[in-house]
Image (cartoon, rainbow, N blue to C red; front, side, top):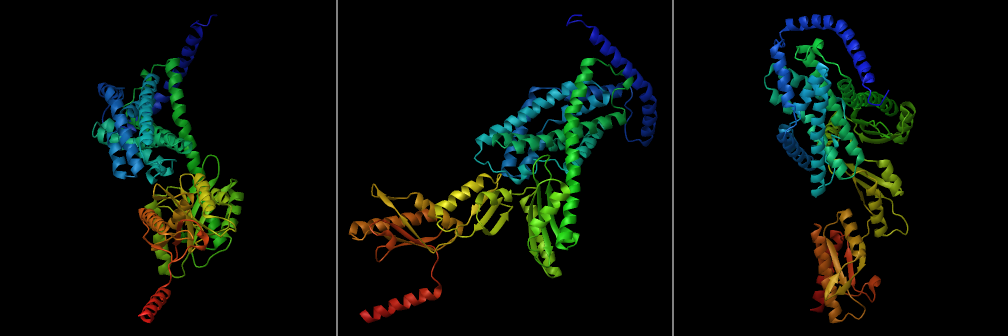
Length: 561
């Protein structure tokens, strides 16, 4: 038997035909009885004969690949990307309204309902090309855009949730029903596309910023929604009688293999998402139980609870609990019990808000809800464990600002550390923060002595000045006094240079939004003997000390007079 012998294909085709015949013998009577019950409800029009054939042909035509389809995919993907980068819901909705993915999705669903391998393969090609155009457009605009931060709109599309799945299924059913009714199909179709083009643009963003976790999560969301919508179309098409009768289904090995492959491509991510959603729901219930038990609170005291259950890796938990007393070491105790019960490594971010009366508890719950809404948290939790490990210093305070996606850390003063050391530590922690911004507040100093140089009659800065300005910005200081100092000789030229340096530093501070004033020291700084530079007074004198200084000056003036 040669490699081109058609006998194996013939035998496979014959086997498929026999299997199909058995299915028809079993399925046709059951489907006919079920269809009779459906017809009595009056929900669907009569789609027997030419009406059903015309509808199937119309769906097939709308799902074909055209130049207009490719152009609209590119435009929709571009608008979605810009809306995601700006975190603008209105712009993202605009991208949804012009997305053309409705046509091939409907054709794919009808292909599944009719067991038409040829139509399934054609629809999958059109969807794949449209998806590729959307992803490439997102990548290109991400590269060209100066905005690279992960916005709440982007983060919300990096992992499928139970709500996303429910929206996709209901949207698919609504779109399919409108299609078989041949009323309002276009309006429903663009609503269905809402679940597809923004995730594709997020995939492009993830690839553009080299974040494979973002890209993979958004692509899983896209495939999950696509599968849910397509299978919903198939269900409605079969129930309504719009699908091709099974008696007229042609079975060929090539089309059957193509149909099975397409089904597996869509069914696999759908199954993965269902597993993940189920595991996350069970984990959420377990986390709630453990928190209530360890902290001795009721379920209503948990104002916020978010559980991120990845397929692999660390389980992220973010919780805000309103209680009447603070429980020391609660984080470690809850984490140990959860890791034992869940069987996964867990990273817990627990915030305990103290509230003793009903009014204060109500305000705390409302504040937590407002914070959650404003931040668009969507399961977004900073990797606090990695940040703490990178910093490696004992911390006296740590704040998480979800609106700005930043983490502020106040470490204890470390002996021998300079501002440059703290600044370098911030850069290292920022690199492991996963898109969050780490802000380290170095120990406050009342005065900073910064040596400077003169080049071409102009004062120039350097690393020491950059470190000082960074620290002042982190301290959020205002009303800073900049005193220029010169060498020990204090010649007229040196005095002029000292004043120039003070004015230069003041201008740098004002560029950063920090109010400052310049002056000259009455004598050379002890730290700047023989040098040129500035002494920055960060902590202002108290009003009482200022008044005393002023009064002493007035007294000296009276004595001199």
